[in-house]
Length: 259
Image (cartoon, rainbow, N blue to C red; front, side, top):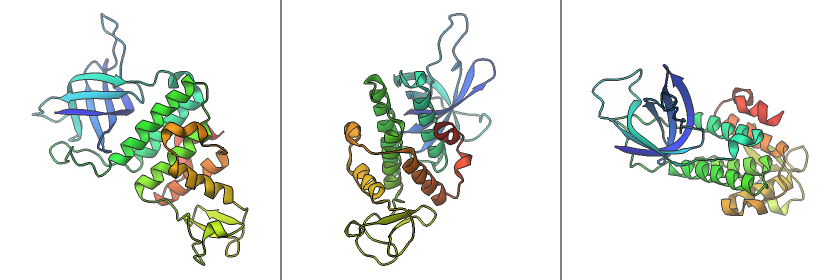
């Protein structure tokens, strides 16, 4: 059986082997044991399992289990695509790490012999992540990379595909149309927007409009998605964490990116 997916985690094992996790094309996460995956040896082969690389792995028929029933053994593997510029930009690298940490908080584990690889119920998540990586690389090559821009766009599209996007049309209290109101307030802990007649706080109408625009912006048009800032990114992260009963400090890359 052949799997394709993005490397979102890798752990060295023994002298030259690797245990890697891939975000598969169907949106699930599969774990693989890669003999010789660290590279090296007499021929000094480099490892091709870098974070964010798109891999194709053919697995062996397993008669015995290694460490866990979810671990599949690679018979053959090859790299389809890799982000070459990300590793040379520290903020871009932290951003990619944050993406993968977020994915790990809700992803469903692929279980050999039980899970259906052809089930595409969660493929939207893979589409969001793969597009996000491709266009981070694109922005770095073009020297147009803005971390806040990419993170906001990623979070809006991820929240939409997860089905937990806050209501951006109506006030959560009085149900009046938010765009008809001169001021709106976002409340991450409540997962909603409200008009300033119903809730006190800073006017975040611009934030509301950027969420709506992010939902409508294709990744190819990321350069035209303007006006973002890390304060708004932080609110989206807080909202995500509230939905999944997490604390932002549990995301190790979060503090590195936002410091």
